[in-house]
Amino acid sequence: MDIPDLAEIDAIAAAVRDRTELKPRIALVLGSGLGALADAVESAVTISSAELPGWPVSSVEGHAGRLVFGTLEGQNVCTIQGRVHFYEGHSMQRLAVPVRVLNRLGAELLIVTNAAGGLNPEFSVADLMMIVDHIFFPGMAGHSPLRGPNLDQFGPRFPDMSRAYDPELIQLALAVAAEHQIPLRQGVYMCLSGPSFETPAEQRLMKLLGADAVGMSTAHEVVVARHAGMRVLGISGITNVWSLDGSSKASHAEVLQSGAVIGPKLEAIIRGVLRKL
Image 1 (tube, rainbow, N blue to C red):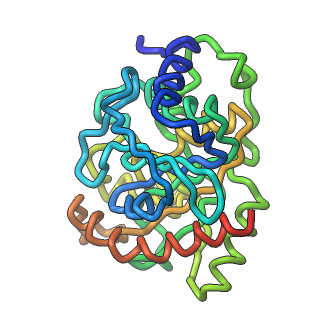
Image 2: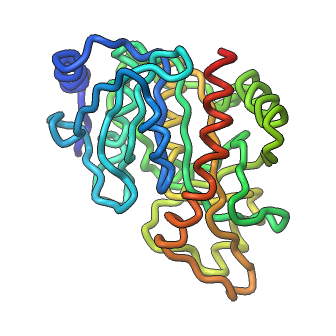
């Protein structure tokens, strides 16, 4: 089983320190089609994830595979421009490496974004949804990023997830959205393993379970961040909306196209949150 230990995580962190002295306070993970925010980082130092042995490398279009260190709205940040997914063949423990490395480098707050399919009938394409909770289906089925020996240097064996998404950060983001007159919905995100999109029967099941949006990422990152005591803010960009009768179809091209519309709104909210921290 591929379970990185603390020595490997710290070796990757050391490789990053060889390239930049900046200590990020905030880590940002940018989802499919949402990577443009990394271009706004000032005094940027860019590291290809392929240069870091042990760092999982993305193979998906729309995920550049870069770490961008610098400042944004006066905050020291690292943006992960291109996340890696379980369906690409990595273990969940390997997928935990980026957040854990950035935590070892000093990050105490994680902002996660993703492209998601809308299950809530009130949602429309290009909406933004504040994640207030999640249903981590692979984790519930045994594929937890915390499976294996507990790394006590990060957190306890049994971390509390009752407030996975920080209530104060949620209120801050809602206030910023209101200031910019950007509608920001709230809902529950469901993480599936992918890579196939969901059948109509699966969509009906997810709706019954209380999910408002569905995607193939994010939850494992939130679990390891909370294990390490990091505060988390999560926002989904609704790139397509499911019809429970099976009449809608989804494609990755549609996800990327919608991301171009969602990106500016998402950037305005994240910048506003960073300014107010």
